[in-house]
Length: 137
Image 1 (cartoon, rainbow, N blue to C red):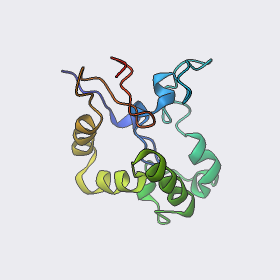
Image 2: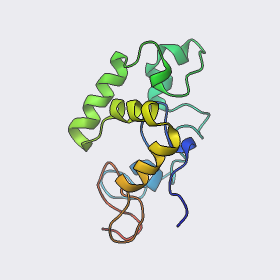
Image 3: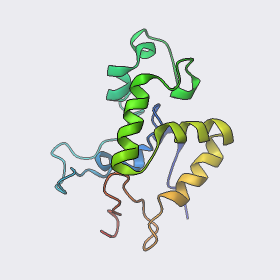
Image 4: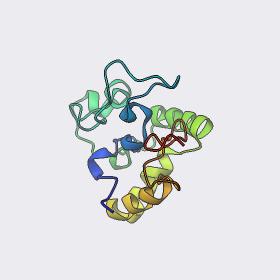
């Protein structure tokens, strides 16, 4: 089976864009998005809204591939986003970033494959809804 995830789908903040509800093209209410599927944070001019709005390094035109490369890691903005994701979606962005740094991108992507794989059809499970949009389970 081909790999589900690629490094270009991992946002600077540690979100795996391919598990995001916007990537699947849905809203939290379960309806299709008017503007279709999101192509991911990196493919949209290489910065997601969170990074553009909250990261002082990016605002200062400094290049950061992943937040763990920054001397301010984890910054206050990332910590707040991480707390939201921990509470609402049982997933830690800071933990994701620390894992990427510790094991490298290839091993991290392998772990993501297992973590987000639908047990029924092998599709990708959404982090926000815990639903597989390939088989609707």
